[in-house]
Length: 213
Image (cartoon, rainbow, N blue to C red; front, side):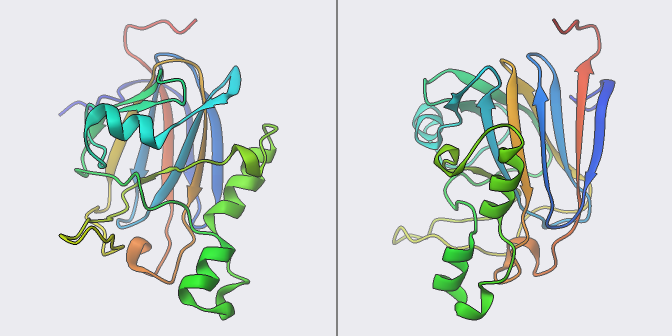
């Protein structure tokens, strides 16, 4: 079966466990995020590459698609209700939009003050975003690729064992030039990474038969 990400490879990177990554994905290009070893959450943000005040909006995305989980066909909408990226392939099945990013503050609140020194996704976003002129005010609610956050009958959320497996991938098509930030989640206090963070792979391709301006 041919992947939606088939085409000329422009960038291919293994993102180590706990590390961050960023790139500009041009309109029409494809970004594949592969869970190399299984059960590894990938926290993700997207911005208009030419105006970072226009950024991924969880409320707009959830409202437009009528659900909180992302999969093939889901469109990541901006704060201006414009499309940033579309999920064109998903071999996992669903991804989280409401669990948020771990931070030193949330770790200490949930798991105790002994976790304060542990690295977290917010710190990854701040360090990686800083390379592009972004700061704490530019961080918004993020996507969590591969993270399993079911909603219980009483409305509570749980962070439970993932449904991903080694080699599964999600592929996104850029609908405009986008700046993407990814935190390969360092969390070890809940099951989102199987208590053992591992590497991800990011691949940017130009689809066969296309020409990128």
